Length: 136
Image (cartoon, rainbow, N blue to C red):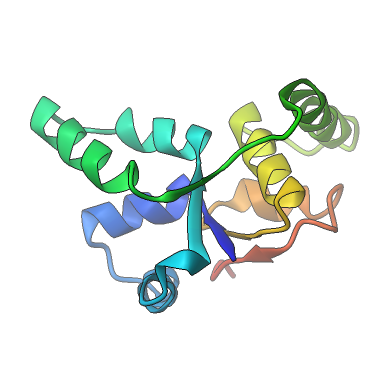
């Protein structure tokens, strides 16, 4: 099971061809392999270019399988600790939302499919985060 990050969905929505999208297309043949989180959903919707585009994205992504947190307070604390740990090691994470998404993947035992260097940096403090990417 994969948690597909916004960084992949943006490429998908824009029709940008890449190896990560070829992989996503294969996953989408079995929709139960693909899921999202409420944070990813929010990030996708806020990138809409028009109200019609917003509505189209909402219709498609609202039908996806959503993963969340069993104990949101503990999960947000864990995500904050991820961010804190990165900072202490001199690793810059551009968005604390990425730490929440990583925490969601961990808690739900999902592989995070992404195209974002910040998640690669998380490997240094979060080796248990399973990731799939095509970054070099």
